[in-house]
Amino acid sequence: QRALCWVRRDLRLRDHTALAAATRQTREVIVVFVFDTNILRNLEDKDDRRLTFIHHSLQDMQRRLVKKGSSLLVCHGDPVLDIPRLAQDLKVQAVFTNRDYDPYARKRDRIVEQKLKISDVAFHSYMDQVVFEHPDIVTRQGEPYKVFTPYKNAWLAALRPEQLVEEKPNLKRLAQAKVFEKWSDPWSLKALGFEENDLWLKAGEEGARAAWKKFQKHMHRYHRDRDFPSRNHGTSGLSAHLRFGTISIRELVRTALTQKDEGARAWLTELIWRDFYQTILDRFSYVVRGAFRSEYDRIQWPGKPEHFEKWCRGETGYPLVDAAMRHFERTGWMHNRLRMVVASFLVKDLLIDWRWGEAWFARKLLDFDLASNNGGWQWCASTGCDAQPWFRIFNPVTQSKHFDPEGRFLRAHLPELAGFSNTHIHWPHEAPASEQEKAGCRLGRDYPTPIVDHAAQREKALKLFEGVSQTV
Ligand code: FAD
Image 1 (cartoon, rainbow, N blue to C red):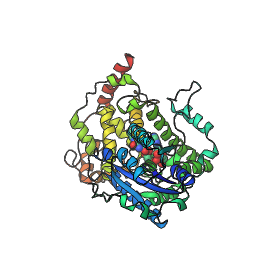
Image 2 (image 1 turned 30 degrees about the vertical axis):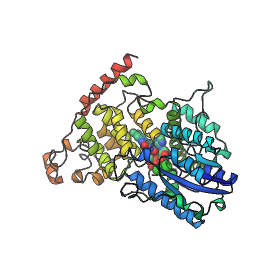
Image 3 (image 1 turned 90 degrees about the horizontal axis):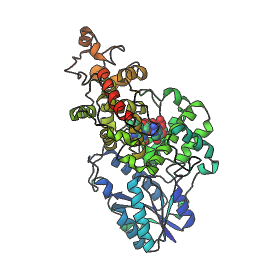
Image 4 (image 1 turned 180 degrees about the vertical axis):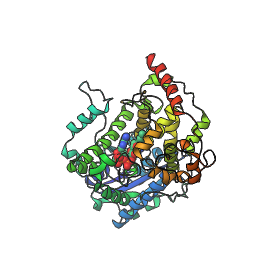
C-alpha cells in the first residue's frame, strides 16, 4: 500500500498529523509539495519573501528526507490536476493532508477529493494547523462565538491533554527516492520565475526550532515586554513559522501550558486569538470581501490615494508610523503594536478604506495569514467582531512615547531623526530650530512635514463612524 502525504502549510516532519497518520496506515509514503500556479500567478513581486521562505523550508525538509533515503516530490502546476495525476501514475491508494481553512484552499481540496474518488483513491484530511476548528468550540445554542473572551474560556475548558500529544510520523515508512524521482519538477526559485530575497529569520524546521528555543527563555516576561518593539525577544517572532507550519502549534501550546506563569498565560492567549480568527474566517467567509459588521460597508471613505502611497512608503511625517512602515518594507515583518498603530492611522487619520491596508499587508507580510490579517485589520478599523470601539482612536505620538520611550526603534529605522532628543523625537515638528540644526535634520527637506493633522482627522473619523452607527 502506497500513499501521498500532500504538504501545504505544514512544512516539517516532526509532530505532523497527516504524515503520522499516513505512515501509520500505509507501508510506503511519498511526501509531495505543489508550487500552486493559481497562487503564484497572483503574487505581484518577483522577489516575494514568502517564496524564499517556502523554498528554504522545503530544502530543509529535503535534507531530512534524504537522510532517510527518501526525497521530496515537488511539482509546479495546478494541484487540482497534479495530485490526481500523481495518485494515478504512482498507483497510490490514498492521499493524506492537513486541513487549510482559506476559502480558496477549501474549494481546491473539495475538487481534488472528488477527482480522487472517481479513481477510487481515498482523501484523508486532518486538523493540524489549529488546536480547535469549527464547530469544536460553539455556544450553548451551537453558534460560533463572535466575542473573544468567552471563546477563549470555552477553548481552555474544552482542551484535553490527548489533543496535544505529539503526532510522530514513522519515518521508516517513507518511500525510497528512486520510486518517484522522475515525477519531480525542477524547483529552484529561478525555475519558478522568482528571485531570492533576504530573510531576517532562518526558515525551515531548523530555523523554527532555534527561534522557539530562544523564546522559551523569555516567555515568562512576555506580558511585560510584548508591547515594546525595540525589546529583543519581547515576542516570539514565530508567526512565519506558524504560517508555514515549520513548527507544530501543539508543541507551543503544550509548553505554554506547562510554564503556567503570567507571561506564558498571556502568550497562550495570542495563540488562541489565532484559532479564533481561523474560525471566524471559516464560518463567516464573507469577511474577505467586507466588514464583519456589514453596516460599516456603508462608510464612504474620503481618504486620498496619494496619502495611501505616502503611508506605504513611510512618509507621513508621523515618526512611529514611518519607522514601522520602512522597517516593514525592508523585512516583511512588523511588531503587533506597530501593526495596530499603522492600521489605525490609515483608517482613522487618513480615512482610507481598511481593505487597502489589508491588501498591502497581504502583499508584503512574510507571515501573511488571511484569517489573522483580516481579523487584525477589522479589529483596528472597528468593523470586526469584538473590535476596538470606533470612538477609541490611537494617537500615534502618544503611542510612540509610551512604547518607544527612548526612541530606540525610531532611531534605528529613521536615521534622519536620530539626533533629536528623547523629548522631541516622537514629534520633531515642535522641536526648536536650534535642536533641528543640532540634529542635522531640516524638517520638510530631510524628513516630511505631517501630511494630516491628527486632532482634525480624529474629529472627521468620529463623524464618519457616528454617521453609520446611528443609522443601524
Ligand atoms: P507573538 O506575540 O509571539 O505571538 C505568538 C503567535 O500568536 C504569533 O506568531 C501568531 O501566530 C499568534 N498571534 C499573535 N497575535 C495575534 C493576533 N492578534 N491575532 C492572531 N494571531 C496572533 N498575524 C499573522 O500571523 N499573520 C498576519 O497576516 C497578521 N496580520 C495582522 C494585521 C494587523 C493589522 C494586526 C493588528 C495584527 C496582525 N497579525 C497577524 C497578528 C500579530 O500582529 C502577529 O501574529 C504578531 O505580530 C507576530 O509576531 P510574533 O510571532 O512575534 O507574535
